[in-house]
Image 1 (cartoon, rainbow, N blue to C red):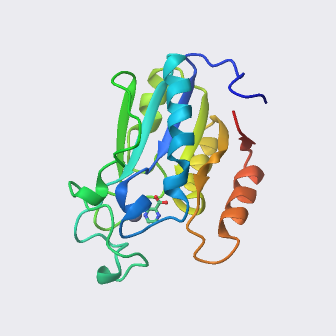
Image 2: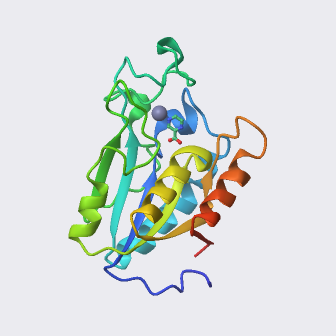
Length: 192
Ligand code: VGL
Ligand code: ZN
């Protein structure tokens, strides 16, 4: 696929996963996340110019969230709803129109790595007749992976924007393995 040559239409949507301060330069920093902002913004412009809807997911945890180390979970406290760290990175482009914000992980007792889990994302996509999803953001091995596989399981055609994702890689190779799982599930990796 060439440079931004794909013909986009109203049945296509961009999903920008968790481009929040805490994941980019805060408490749960993803290596290289700052570096993909220009790539993400380029996709945002491209989809916006083509009249496509853009969905921004965000991790939006309560203080007592189960995923935090203090509460017995695996992660440092991050993306607490309403805090600075939970806000979208100031360099992230967010157009005025055709934009939806999807908050996830809002229930203290459950984690939600997929943008579909406990949200109305599927409903919003269906209402608009959207069939193809193009996914970028962080983290490849957590929320990107689960959002991609969640979308495939719901019947969407899902493309992973390879130059605009970054992973946590708690164990070496996690992001590569996550991509392999996404491909196995039917996702297609592209760079536009
Ligand atoms: C994420 C770890 C914890 C993510 C969210 O957005 O990938 N990772 N919470
Ligand atoms: Zn989280």
